[in-house]
Length: 203
Image (cartoon, rainbow, N blue to C red; front, side, top):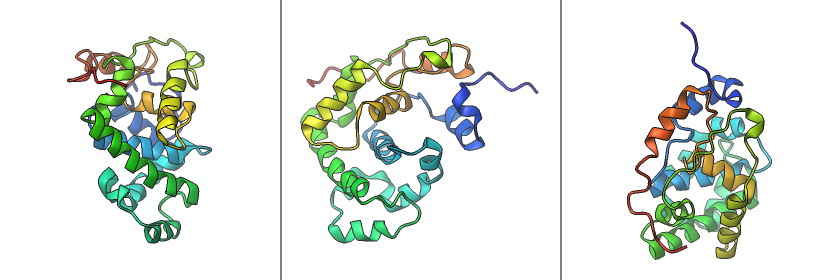
């Protein structure tokens, strides 16, 4: 049986292939899913996505199933506990940042009705469809990602620079960066046609 055409980055390992086929680019409209992606992508800073992908279950266990409210309630004692956890990246600044980001995430969610509504408003509630033909056409970041990163930094978030934010946009379906030759491109485009259910909150 012939394998379908895929984005080049997904061919490096079975883990990446599974993630590409099942999750990458699927629009995430729920706060739980978005908080998970932001946590993992911030942890990735300076590392490969494969490293984080293979530690995903460790992160899920260590950070209370990616429950933002639970993580926001973590204490300095939890930081010390996490520093001994081999299932995650034991970087104190990243761990402390995750706790702080969780608190800020909840604040924005309360202000806008949900964090999802807040962040999807940056693309007017609908996934961007750049229709990229070649791997070389996919940027590491964009002006919009820089804008979102600056806004989050203004609110106090950390480890969410423009490159991390663009990775989030790709993963959470805010932009469909599957190549037009990839079998998932049309499927992901179809998923985003209706857009965010209640887009339009103020930034």
